[in-house]
Amino acid sequence: MGFMDKFRNKFKQSEEKEEVSAKYKEGMKKTRSSFSGKINNLIARYRKVDEDFFEELEEILISADVGVMTVMDLIDELKMEVKRQNISDTKEVKDIISEKLVEIYYGEADEKIEELHLEEGQLSIILVVGVNGVGKTTSIGKLAHQLKQKGKNVVLAAGDTFRAGAIEQLEIWGERASVDVIKQNAGSDPAAVIFDGIKAAKSRNADVLICDTAGRLQNKVNLMNELAKVKRVIEKEVPGAPHEVLLVLDATTGQNALTQAKTFSEATDVSGIVLTKLDGTAKGGIVLAIRNELQIPVKFVGLGEQMDDLREFDAHAFVYGLFADMLQEEE
Image (cartoon, rainbow, N blue to C red; front, side):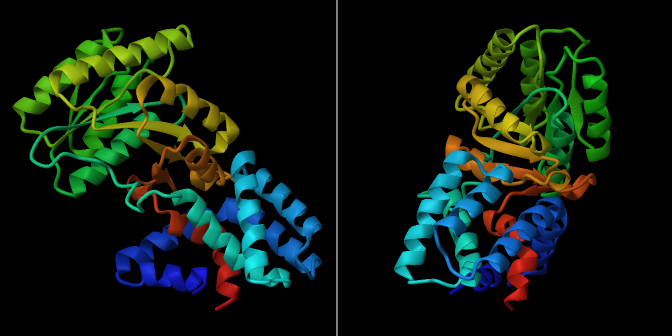
């Protein structure tokens, strides 16, 4: 069974799934036009699968920010599969690339790794971290809206007290999503704001508290110490929390996003990635690099500017978005 057959089986059951795949196809237009065009050109120029073919494919994958380590793994997997199936025609490689990208993303993990971990019947706390300018506050607002749509009682805590305008920005998103925002004055102790947020969320019988945090202090050490302090307050007030630590990254920064992920994961036990602006980059392969090199799942991706454009990540839909035009040619 080819990738398109598997994809159809996964997404044929509901209109919602069809809408998801359409959103990925539209949102990944920039990455796909660059990536698919190069692969199509490569397949047109080579009649047989040989070392030169794989070398050029390697360069294309690296240029899409799939990541050197991930590309090496993928090329090795492809070579083995081509040999196993005795494939010589380059046109037959397209489907295998699609399948192997999904396999590399999931590895030994369950396909539910992208699901948000929330506690049933008690307060769940989501700590959101990331440098300034990546879309952190916007993502919090969109996530709050999404959870509210699912019937959750959501409260936000304005823990980024250092950046000018951050509190006001979160309040605007709180109004849009119709959720309460707990705040103090600019320059206040972030841990104190989070403490107040927890107390308020408990008193209001909230299902989810989403905590914003600082994106930049005087230096990296200060920032990481501040995040560690916030995390200790959360752990003390709600044992077992935070239930998710989501790191927001800007997809358009490519390999720099990978560096940020390494830094934050060392300090805060990041459990998932929110990858913004995927619709604005030609290097969407960074999704695979983050997952394969750091073993952190991408839980949400930004595929547009609208309130509903923060989407739960799905590796099958992502790969479909990457190859949609090429795969549909085969139908």
